[in-house]
Image (cartoon, rainbow, N blue to C red; front, side, top):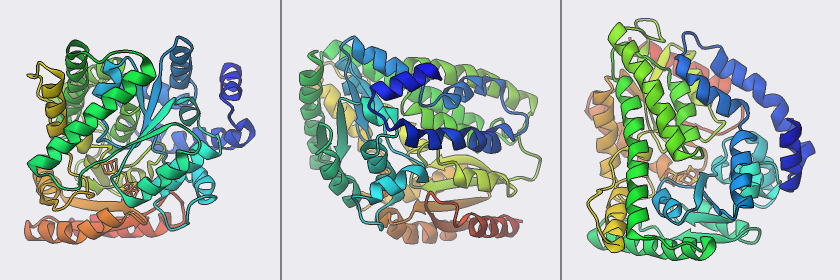
Length: 423
Ligand code: BJ8
């Protein structure tokens, strides 16, 4: 702790204000995670990372920077980590998931902006998150209007690059994204002083594919009738995926999967028989936002799959490893990343197809489609999604929420009632 304090001060953090977050987090972790029964033993690594979330990994990154390394902060699953790693950099996800950071964002943003954006801006400008302090450059993207405009504010405080993401998926759009990736290569090369070569890009494509495969393995275990791991624990793993060292993370997920696959074989479940299997779709849950998972899993439900960017959108589909030149590899990266079905795309029937496919693959009893307040794209897309689910005979509940606790009771009532209609 004393070392953390020294590091936080050196990072220019507002340590007094940050202490307020540190004082509430352990209780929240206890309530949400430690109260669960029969957790897999190999969650111990992820619990350890969480217990010192602003200490362990930031200390590694501080050390990396002392040795001349560059850290790039990202806000979206479309930004390809492979390119950053190939230049010898480190990528770290920065989306913030706590109400603690929202008032800081509201100092410079209108109140009617999505809490993820407000919290991310607040975490940087209020100097209350070490990850936001130690990045050398932010890499944004033009996925939604709120983010786009918030990046203009952040760009006054820290070097920023914004990638122009197309909003359609025609061949020319995929080619355009490939060009954006090539521009990103130039930027990370200039920052790190390292060249991205065909060899190191190929190596890092394989590295991140291995991470995706480990997560696919994890998710596959949740398709079993007996559910070997809670959705809440899986969500924590997905959140850590955004900032942990990718090789170590892959190894830890695979170790956990060994245990989970044995649990599946042995019929071990973390939920009693009859617990309703839920697919959660919609906007991502950034750390430490565990609100919906916690409510669902203490209301007679089990989240068995997340169709979110802290879920399947993060790891489904591998990058083709067949490219031999940088151009071919950028095209392969573009194809894979443009196959993420975020609501910022139009038309986006692929996402609706995905939700129905996942509902079947994970044998769910119902879908909860949830988006953050003021996220217009997911809010509007919910109409077509709900209709398609109803047509497919899959019960659906649509919710809108934020990071506050104000609606917790109301959510419990609505989710509880939904569990009851699932029979
Ligand atoms: S690929 S979901 S990570 S954009 S919730 S900030 S969309 S107003 S987070 Fe996202 Fe990339 Fe899409 Fe995934 Fe805007 Fe909506 Fe807020 Fe959002």
